Amino acid sequence: MIPEKKILGVCAWLSVKFDIDLSTLRLLFVAAAILGLGSPIVIYLILAIVKPQNGI
Image (cartoon, rainbow, N blue to C red; front, top):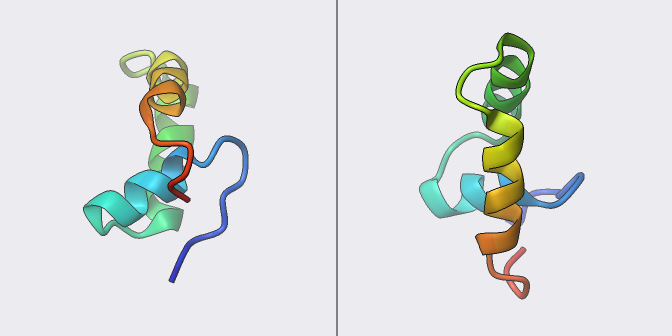
């Protein structure tokens, strides 16, 4: 099953690649962004550039 991608598809791509629940992964990214843990927005943008375009 291919998960639904929302913004850039990074969380959907990571959930398929590492077999992680999509909702949990999105919640972790949002919590990290709110708490400011390790620049999650910058990491998200880098992953959006790195992930394959023909993937999900």
